[in-house]
Image 1 (cartoon, rainbow, N blue to C red):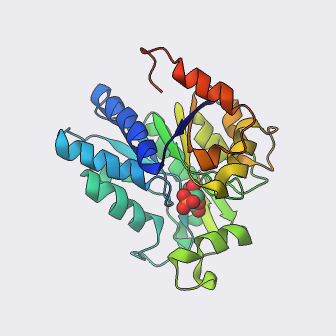
Image 2 (spheres, protein in one colour; image 1 turned 120 degrees about the vertical axis):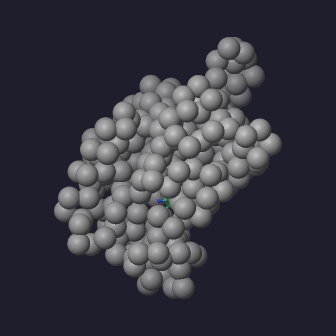
Image 3 (cartoon, rainbow, N blue to C red; image 1 turned 135 degrees about the horizontal axis):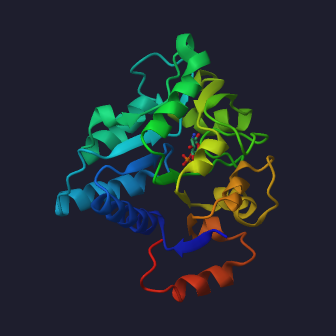
Length: 261
Ligand code: GLP
């Protein structure tokens, strides 16, 4: 079962997860991080940047693999996930740019891009800690409903809902690409620790389905139930539709001190 931790707000979530990532890097300087885009993980990156500023840590060997990328945006487009990861993660954290990978959404290379990305993750020894957000359709990465739990990095078609949700980053909804390349649910499930963060009532249904709903491809988030080490960090609003909330709070309050998340 996933460990569900209810925190006061997004900043508290960011601090909790950032502390765990810092501890991972201290133990393993060449740790492999699974990076996520979207607005949800930003407090994690901000908290990590503060932590590194307060107590410097050598992060030059840290490696990273991003979950997904839009297909067909021109190189350097400010909303390409390559640009977003550079702006929000690589630069503020001082990571080594060459160590940070994002799937290529260049249409010319698409047939081989998924397999290339999978090979790169395997060569790196796999992902130690995968940061995840969740879409309102329940998607992890860009694995929209119907995605196979065994799927690997490949091209997917975004749902109209996801395109509408992400229109805020573009001049108009029509500018949001129709296709993306995303790690599969099978790729994500190979990471050794999944950390899923969600805030706000707009995510409550997706979180309840992921944590407590039936395991079904119709709810890609429910793939987390097949993983042995999952931490779900939510604020009160995102937790509001969880049936077993009292138990999660009880378990967290009684968590043995020696256990990390
Ligand atoms: C995006 C990303 C996902 C992210 C989700 C939620 O489209 N591909 O990785 O988790 O949608 O985004 P946000 O955190 O902005 O709500």
